[in-house]
Structures are given as C-alpha cells and as structure tokens.
Image (cartoon, rainbow, N blue to C red; front, top):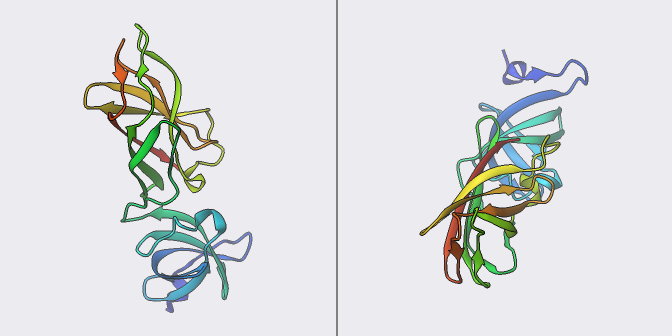
Length: 193
C-alpha cells in the first residue's frame, strides 16, 4: 500500500484531507511531512506568521494544489503581531496552538500611563491594554467576549478578549485598588478555534 493510500479522501470534493508536520517554509509555501511523504502546500494569508516549522497542520487538496486549512498544534510560542494600547508597553506577548485545536495566548504589559483606580465595587471602565493578531481571532464566536483573569503584583481582576477586535480589555479590579505607572500585569486566555 502506498503512503497516498493512507490519506483521507473527502468524497464530496474529491480532494485529499491530511495532517502533517511543517518541515520548511519558503515564501508562502510550506513543506509538510505526511508520515514520510513530503508535499508542498500554500499558506493562506490569514495563517502567515502563524504557521511555523514544527507545527502540526491540516491540509486539503490534491497533486500540486494543496492549501493549509488549520493549525492543529504548535510547539513554539509565537510573538509577532501584538501591539500595546495607549498607556501600556508590551513586555511579552505570545501564542501557540495546542491539540483541539485550541489557542493559548499570554500577555504581560507594563503601565506607562496615568493611574487606573477601581470603584468601591471593583468596577473599571473597560480599559484596552493590548491588541492580539487578527489570525488568532476565532471565526463566528457565539458571544461578544472571551473572559480571562489577570494579575499584578498587588491585585487580581478580570477582563476579556474581544473576538472580533483582538482587544485585550480590563473590566474589574479589587475594590478601590489601583494600577499605577510601572506596574506590571499579566494574563492568559485559551479558547478553541
């Protein structure tokens, strides 16, 4: 039996669907190891910078017309594409795909702007701290936010990732607590894609 016979065939389209590990990237194409059979697949624009050597991807196509349709997992943290909001500097931000597929996103920022103080109930006006890369945003997310917990050295609070904007937003803090210039804050959020 040939290696090609082990591939999954999509009966509706006649195209092959397969999973493999990216071994090389040249321009907008990736070489993918399908268990000993090496093929080339196009990296679509929305996955450029997300597909990296070593990640496990799903492809569709046949012969010389293959395209990567999903990143199923990646071993390395990627840091490209994040930007800080006004009043913050980016110390570290990264993401990686894991089985599922799922995205794990982490971000650590430093406050450079004026002091932010929570009300006596802990409420904050929604405060953007950073923007995640568009390629990480889940398509057709059913609710308007993906919640996360964040912390500083002195406090903890809640926030959300805007699935249509990529904004990482703070929403609450301990009652009457403050985040001042120089404070560092970090968050982590995971969600399926």
